[in-house]
Image (cartoon, rainbow, N blue to C red; front, top):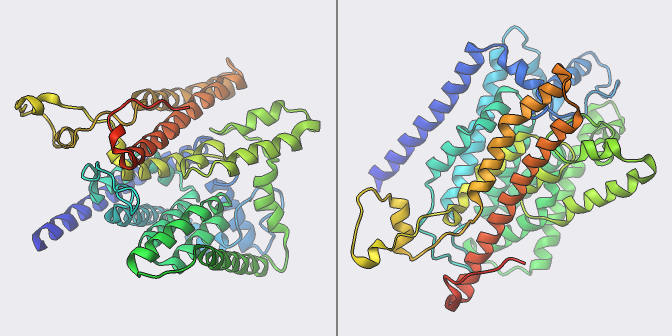
Amino acid sequence: MTTRTMGLDRRKVVVFASAALIRLFLFAAFPSLPNLLTGRVEISTPVSSFKRLQEGVFLYTENVSPYDGGVFHQPPLLLPITAPFLNASNLPLITDILYIIMDLITANALMRIAHVADSTSTELFPSERRNIRWSSVSLGAAFLFNPFTIATCLARSPSVFTNWAILYAIERAVSGDTLTSMVALSLASYLSLYPILLLPPLILLCFDRQKKIKKTSHNVLDFAMSSFGIVTSVIMALLYLSYVITGGSWEFLSSTYGFQLLLPDLTPNVGLWWYFFIEMFDSFRNFFLGVFWLHLGGYVAGLRLFAIFKPYPSISDTSLYLGVLPLYSHIFPCKFDRSQDLGIHYSETTLFKNNCAKNNLSLVMRYTFFAVSTLLYATLLGPAFYYLWIYAGSGNANFFYAITLVWSLGLTVLLADSIFAVLKDEWEVERPEMKGKEVTQI
């Protein structure tokens, strides 16, 4: 046991050190790359732009309201936290190291979630595929070496703070620490508003873990009310601190949360909202704002929702979900190898495929190739179409919006496919006689 633990720890050190060195190398070898990525609409939005954060910090240190001029739209508490790093203009390495550390501790929270393995085996649905799962080190490596994660780090997007708070809230929830989990979720909601949609599933997760770990017998309604009270109290405390920091003004509410709710800035991004509301008549604007928010609030399907339906999405949201998705590696496509039924063994068969065959499992996620191909297609053509529209002048807004539709299509297919696969897995546990039979999604 000791040797195995030491081996895993050694692998973790190698992964973390490699990820940090790659980021440091890119920062040092390509000094213009961070500024280039900071200006990319795929990474920086009006609510997650490093340049806008710099502007807000400058105004804050000059004793001017950071919300004057309508440029800064991020929460006030980010200003005193990041000011010591952003003001070190002669030592940009300090800022770079801050964002590298945030990536590492986010990956660490993700790895700790993987240790629990609740995604493959719960009290009600112990999946028969629970042996088919990635190790925590592999999952952390997938997150840290994801090009979207690296690009977000290099662009120094403030969204890395939100991503860490979300994963830390989940990690504390699966560990049975309800108080810390609710505090972390409150911080994430304060930073980005949308994570508050995770409150209902996180409360249920905390309740389930409390029953399993601490053997408590709370009433679920009382538990939900107490958790809601914690979140409300923490958010109110954070808002009051923001009120104090901004010199006794509530102006930040309309400039941060009101800005995200009402969508006054229609800067292009990888989402679905900006072009739609550019073409929308003003008389219908409020109605369709409500419709779009109903979509975002009505489908509480997890982190992927933020990457598709939020008003100002970026590839940071996608990197977060792609990092969490391997927690459900038991639903990934695997080759059904019938050779074992014939007593034949092929040496080139991987361990993953052998596990699939051993458990008599067939393909679970059905459209993985299509979804991945679509995302790669949009990733490669998105910058080209934006260039043709903005710089070359040989295209128009339809060029870029068309590729963002393709991007959203790929994300939607991946979301629907993964949800279907999890539901099918749970259905086979509940109805063993239906195992292996074709299921139609309606």
